[in-house]
Length: 166
Image (cartoon, rainbow, N blue to C red; front, side, top):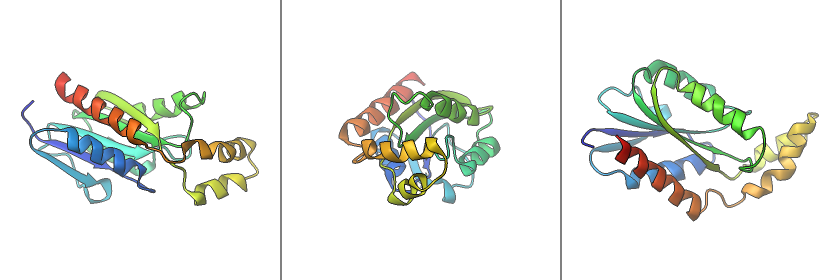
Protein backbone atom coordinates (compact mmCIF):
# COMPACT_ATOMS: atom_id res chain seq x y z
CA UNK A 1 0.00 0.00 0.00
CA UNK A 2 1.25 3.45 -0.84
CA UNK A 3 0.09 6.03 1.64
CA UNK A 4 0.89 7.66 4.92
CA UNK A 5 0.52 5.68 8.13
CA UNK A 6 0.18 7.09 11.64
CA UNK A 7 0.97 5.03 14.72
CA UNK A 8 -0.58 6.98 17.59
CA UNK A 9 -0.55 5.74 21.15
CA UNK A 10 -1.01 6.62 24.77
CA UNK A 11 1.00 4.77 27.37
CA UNK A 12 1.06 5.11 31.14
CA UNK A 13 3.75 2.56 31.97
CA UNK A 14 5.51 2.04 28.64
CA UNK A 15 3.65 -1.14 27.68
CA UNK A 16 1.57 0.36 24.88
CA UNK A 17 4.56 2.36 23.66
CA UNK A 18 6.53 -0.89 23.21
CA UNK A 19 3.70 -2.32 21.10
CA UNK A 20 3.48 0.94 19.11
CA UNK A 21 7.20 0.78 18.37
CA UNK A 22 6.94 -2.86 17.23
CA UNK A 23 4.08 -1.94 14.89
CA UNK A 24 5.93 1.13 13.61
CA UNK A 25 9.08 -0.91 12.84
CA UNK A 26 7.01 -3.34 10.76
CA UNK A 27 5.34 -0.77 8.54
CA UNK A 28 7.08 0.02 5.26
CA UNK A 29 6.85 3.40 3.55
CA UNK A 30 5.87 6.81 4.81
CA UNK A 31 5.00 6.60 8.48
CA UNK A 32 4.90 8.62 11.68
CA UNK A 33 4.73 7.60 15.33
CA UNK A 34 3.39 9.96 17.99
CA UNK A 35 1.95 10.02 21.46
CA UNK A 36 -1.78 10.84 21.29
CA UNK A 37 -1.08 13.79 23.60
CA UNK A 38 0.95 15.38 20.79
CA UNK A 39 -1.23 14.25 17.89
CA UNK A 40 -3.64 16.96 16.74
CA UNK A 41 -5.57 14.95 14.13
CA UNK A 42 -5.32 12.25 11.49
CA UNK A 43 -5.50 14.52 8.45
CA UNK A 44 -3.24 13.41 5.63
CA UNK A 45 -2.95 9.82 6.90
CA UNK A 46 -4.44 6.94 4.93
CA UNK A 47 -4.42 4.55 7.87
CA UNK A 48 -3.94 4.96 11.61
CA UNK A 49 -2.92 2.42 14.19
CA UNK A 50 -4.23 3.78 17.49
CA UNK A 51 -3.17 2.21 20.78
CA UNK A 52 -3.95 2.63 24.43
CA UNK A 53 -4.19 0.70 27.69
CA UNK A 54 -7.47 -0.54 29.08
CA UNK A 55 -8.21 1.47 32.21
CA UNK A 56 -11.14 0.89 34.52
CA UNK A 57 -12.46 -1.90 32.27
CA UNK A 58 -12.48 0.06 29.03
CA UNK A 59 -10.71 2.58 26.83
CA UNK A 60 -9.45 5.78 28.47
CA UNK A 61 -11.65 8.81 27.82
CA UNK A 62 -8.82 10.62 26.01
CA UNK A 63 -8.65 7.81 23.43
CA UNK A 64 -12.44 7.68 23.08
CA UNK A 65 -12.57 11.45 22.54
CA UNK A 66 -9.69 11.38 20.04
CA UNK A 67 -11.35 8.63 17.99
CA UNK A 68 -14.72 10.39 18.11
CA UNK A 69 -13.19 13.67 16.91
CA UNK A 70 -10.71 12.37 14.35
CA UNK A 71 -11.57 8.78 13.45
CA UNK A 72 -14.75 9.29 11.46
CA UNK A 73 -14.38 7.73 8.02
CA UNK A 74 -10.71 6.87 8.68
CA UNK A 75 -9.15 3.44 8.38
CA UNK A 76 -8.24 2.55 11.96
CA UNK A 77 -6.51 -0.46 13.49
CA UNK A 78 -6.55 -0.58 17.28
CA UNK A 79 -3.94 -2.06 19.59
CA UNK A 80 -4.72 -2.41 23.26
CA UNK A 81 -2.75 -3.46 26.32
CA UNK A 82 -4.20 -4.67 29.61
CA UNK A 83 -3.18 -6.48 32.76
CA UNK A 84 -5.85 -9.15 32.40
CA UNK A 85 -5.18 -12.73 31.51
CA UNK A 86 -6.36 -13.52 27.99
CA UNK A 87 -8.90 -16.00 29.38
CA UNK A 88 -10.41 -13.59 31.93
CA UNK A 89 -14.14 -13.58 31.05
CA UNK A 90 -14.70 -9.79 31.30
CA UNK A 91 -11.84 -9.12 28.85
CA UNK A 92 -14.10 -9.64 25.83
CA UNK A 93 -16.51 -6.99 27.13
CA UNK A 94 -13.63 -4.57 27.66
CA UNK A 95 -12.37 -5.20 24.12
CA UNK A 96 -15.88 -4.61 22.78
CA UNK A 97 -15.87 -1.21 24.49
CA UNK A 98 -12.59 -0.53 22.65
CA UNK A 99 -14.18 -1.54 19.32
CA UNK A 100 -17.19 0.66 20.10
CA UNK A 101 -14.84 3.60 20.73
CA UNK A 102 -13.74 3.40 17.08
CA UNK A 103 -17.23 4.73 16.29
CA UNK A 104 -17.67 5.79 12.68
CA UNK A 105 -14.21 4.79 11.56
CA UNK A 106 -13.48 1.87 9.27
CA UNK A 107 -12.18 -0.55 11.91
CA UNK A 108 -9.60 -2.81 10.28
CA UNK A 109 -8.79 -4.93 13.33
CA UNK A 110 -8.01 -5.03 17.03
CA UNK A 111 -4.83 -6.39 18.59
CA UNK A 112 -4.56 -6.94 22.33
CA UNK A 113 -1.95 -8.27 24.70
CA UNK A 114 -1.04 -8.12 28.34
CA UNK A 115 1.01 -5.29 29.76
CA UNK A 116 2.61 -5.18 33.16
CA UNK A 117 0.41 -3.54 35.81
CA UNK A 118 2.07 -0.67 37.66
CA UNK A 119 2.64 -0.98 41.39
CA UNK A 120 0.47 2.09 41.97
CA UNK A 121 -2.50 0.43 40.25
CA UNK A 122 -1.85 -2.87 42.06
CA UNK A 123 -1.86 -1.07 45.41
CA UNK A 124 -5.01 0.87 44.55
CA UNK A 125 -6.86 -2.31 43.57
CA UNK A 126 -5.58 -4.27 46.59
CA UNK A 127 -6.75 -1.58 49.03
CA UNK A 128 -10.16 -1.22 47.36
CA UNK A 129 -13.36 -2.32 49.05
CA UNK A 130 -14.50 -3.81 45.74
CA UNK A 131 -13.92 -7.60 45.71
CA UNK A 132 -13.47 -7.66 41.93
CA UNK A 133 -10.63 -5.12 42.15
CA UNK A 134 -9.01 -7.08 44.98
CA UNK A 135 -9.14 -10.17 42.75
CA UNK A 136 -7.53 -8.24 39.85
CA UNK A 137 -4.76 -7.09 42.21
CA UNK A 138 -4.02 -10.71 43.13
CA UNK A 139 -3.88 -11.66 39.44
CA UNK A 140 -1.71 -8.70 38.36
CA UNK A 141 1.52 -10.69 38.72
CA UNK A 142 0.41 -12.78 35.72
CA UNK A 143 1.20 -9.79 33.50
CA UNK A 144 4.73 -9.26 34.89
CA UNK A 145 7.25 -8.87 32.08
CA UNK A 146 4.59 -8.16 29.47
CA UNK A 147 4.51 -7.35 26.67
CA UNK A 148 7.21 -9.94 26.06
CA UNK A 149 9.04 -10.76 22.82
CA UNK A 150 6.28 -13.15 21.75
CA UNK A 151 3.56 -10.51 22.17
CA UNK A 152 5.64 -7.90 20.35
CA UNK A 153 6.07 -10.37 17.49
CA UNK A 154 2.30 -10.93 17.46
CA UNK A 155 1.90 -7.14 17.19
CA UNK A 156 4.26 -7.09 14.20
CA UNK A 157 2.30 -9.89 12.51
CA UNK A 158 -0.94 -7.99 13.20
CA UNK A 159 0.46 -4.81 11.61
CA UNK A 160 1.78 -6.71 8.62
CA UNK A 161 -1.59 -8.40 8.12
CA UNK A 162 -3.43 -5.06 8.31
CA UNK A 163 -1.07 -3.48 5.78
CA UNK A 164 -1.30 -6.44 3.40
CA UNK A 165 -5.10 -6.34 3.65
CA UNK A 166 -5.31 -2.72 2.50
